[in-house]
Length: 82
Image 1 (cartoon, rainbow, N blue to C red):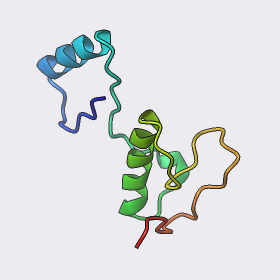
Image 2 (spheres, rainbow, N blue to C red):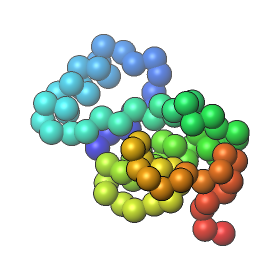
Image 3 (cartoon, helix red, strand yellow):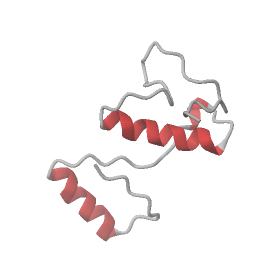
């Protein structure tokens, strides 16, 4: 899995990502979903981390998966362990 954080993406970045995807890698851009109406920077971070954990099949309670019946944490609520 590759989570490219550099921006803007150059032709070299894109060609390398294409080669990796063709080799079986999963490209997960760290792009938060604003449809969830984040209330804090932590909500944006949790969204991206949740998508990475989903790809790794790691259970979490950060953000509900699309179509999941679980209610997501309240916006701005810190669901991470203390």
